[in-house]
Image 1: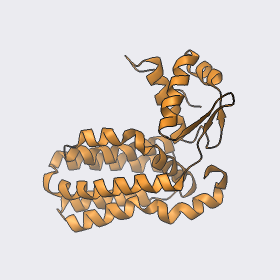
Image 2: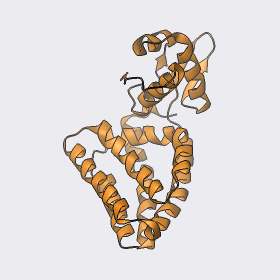
Image 3: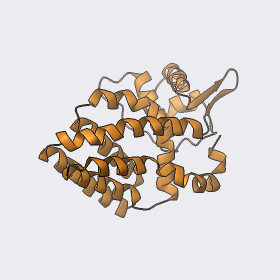
Length: 224
């Protein structure tokens, strides 16, 4: 498990929740793995109670399963839940890029383009963690461009199911389609081409449907 530093004013429970969730999304805690409260607590340098509380919260998101007297298990990837979240994001972000065509300032576009340059750098240097973070940041910038920061925050915890598939896609597919999509989205917004922007974001968020067969073939034990 990858351990990051505890943030200022972050409670032990919040730290445990964030750390465990990040490791589930990155697949450092693999689907189907049994986890020990004591071992997790020792790795993070905190007591067992906040770890137990964090696992209970994560179980409410359906990414951890808790079995009394037996322990906790990282949930297998549920394709139906993944598609549900994909549908939600596709619905929201199709409307988002359409609005961005009207509202994006030159500063907004420069921020998006800077993000793309960093994505390309980390893809070239095969730093998947950084690439994943920048992918998240790109979409966050789209929400900010439309002044929909609260909507983005509300999506946060729901995204875990879709995010695990994104992590797996980065490992298995290893191509530049994601960045190419992002660049096309920025160009469409710059050109105020709402039709193109909506078509590209819809295709972008549907790539999992195309890649799903290959992911399941290579990692069948990760899926429900």
